[in-house]
Length: 309
Image (tube, one colour):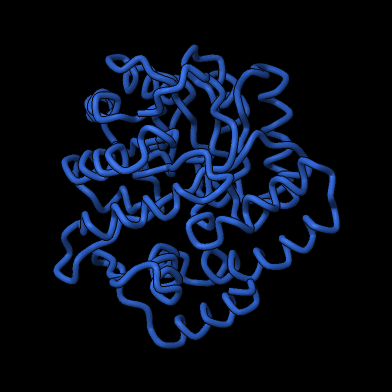
C-alpha cells in the first residue's frame, strides 16, 4: 500500500499481466519480476493488477488476492496499486474489495459484470458499486467499457449517477472511440470535476490525451512504458511533433495487439511481446485461449519493429 498522504491518483499506470507456469499455475516468481520491472520505470506512478490484461476473468478469488499480495510486497511502498474487482455477484465483489484493501490496494477498480453486456439499469450499477465498497470504504475507479461491449458501456445517465458516489476518484475510460471519450469526459467534468478521467484505449491515446486526460491505465505500458510516458508528457507540455512521433510508434503495436482479429487473443499477444523482448520466459495463457499460431507471432514481430523495439 502506498504510504504517502497524497490523495492525487493522476498519472500513467501500467496494467500488468499474470504469468503462468506451463501447467497453468500462477508463476509467482515471474510475476514478482514483471511487477518490479514495470513499476521501476520512470513516469509509471502505479500499477493496475487483476485487470483484464491480468486475466482476472481466469483467476479464482484466492489467486487474485495472491497477485495483489505479491504486488504489494514488491512495490507497494513506492507505487499506487489499483486492484481490479471483477465479479458477477455484488456480495462477492464486496468480499474481494475488503480483502484487497487489507492486502495493500490503494484503489479498487470495479468492473461491470460481464452479464451486463445484455442489459442493466442505472439502479443496478449504483447498487453494485455501493455494495462492493460497503465494507472497504476505499477510493474507487469506474470502468467505462468500449462502445462495442454492448450494455456494459455505461450510458450518460448511469455514468452521471456513478460519478456522484462519494468514493469515486477516477474512471478508466476505455470507450475505444474518441468521440465517445470526449462526450463522457465533458459530462464528468461538468458533474464531478474532481473525478479523474483517464484515457485507456491503447489505439487512441494520442487523440484522447489531446482532448484532456488526468492519466491512463493501459496494458501497452508494460511493453513500451517509456514511449507511453513520453507521449503523455509531450501532450501535457504542448510538444505536438514529439507526441506525433510517439504515436507513430505506439499505433502499429496497439493495432496488432488489440485491433487485430480475434480480439480474444489480446492477452496472449501481450505475453508473447514480453517473451520476444526477453522479459518473460513463458507466455502461457489459460484455456480456452490457445497458444498463438506462428502467423500471429510474425505479425507481432513486425509491429514491434515498427515501434522501434
